[in-house]
Length: 431
Image 1 (cartoon, one colour):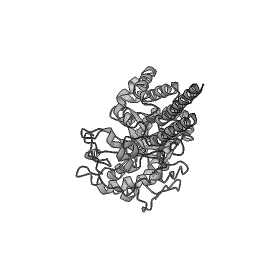
Image 2 (cartoon, rainbow, N blue to C red):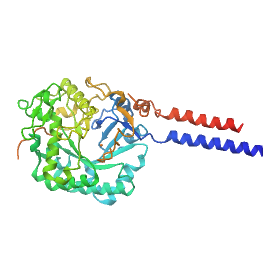
Image 3 (cartoon, helix red, strand yellow):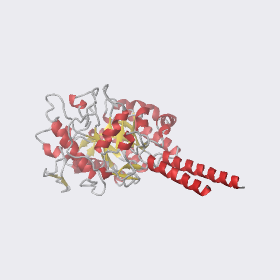
Image 4 (cartoon, rainbow, N blue to C red):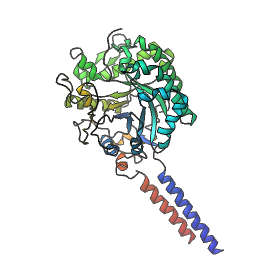
């Protein structure tokens, strides 16, 4: 009898130890940066470091939200068990296939489901700047069907409350953006944008826009003040003559122009759809005629943008909706086409050294468990190259990227100690 009693206690000890160790190995996906600052991790280059090198760079910035442009398995595995929240792109070339419900289900099964729940995927962006891109004539008709099919596939596996499906637009979808109250979409794009807004409203997903004050300034340096485009707090700002709202910088003016455009195109959607900035940045170099593309200006813009978003404030039109934005980009990408400046948007050079020094970095206490104080996903209520002016028609203890970069999950040691302690205590009783 005594032997049986002892064996039972030893079996209980082993079971408790295994249970606590299972908790130790559970994904730490409930811990995400409290700040709404994110960064775009593009990989259009032949000299970029491996994905593992990204983690310490993110830790140095204090950023825990990352947007990637495809579902590369090596990248998604790198972010497993880090708590970093990902926005994952569906490449443009996949739109036709994903527009079919069967193709959407297959894409989700192959590119997303294998990495859950260890990798925290909060948003899927279907294409990038599809309506204004070089292939818009061929791809625009697939955009909304692809969004709908992929959302349906996500819902079918019970993940629609965790993963939002939307798309990112170029600011060029606007036909008019100045003053912000006159914001309006291009008339030729309304047949696409109005039903997309209906979709955003129905699914509670955000309207993403790539907004670059740099293009506004470089296109009209006499009409746009540099300090206004650089988001300098010392700039006196501009008043909207229609609403009398005061705009301290160009980025919030661009965002509010989009809000006004949504209201003009789709009154019902305007009541619920949130605008978020999926890309914004400033190049640090360019061709000789790209005189505004300097390290000094890039440092000022990106520091100010991070500070602006970290303050948690809204825009003049939507003061109660905190601004969310993803800085473009993590690295300089030497194979990007277009203007020379396109290859110099990175905060870092490919060797991991800073392209310039930022005057602002997110505080370490910008990290908090639970998805940033409101749920980190892209679902509204669940938490989450353009133009400028267009005339014409610290750590809370739960999340530590640095720990992940060292190859050790942040909470592993605490849970392992607990497992040993529980097992030891039971064995003492058994004795």
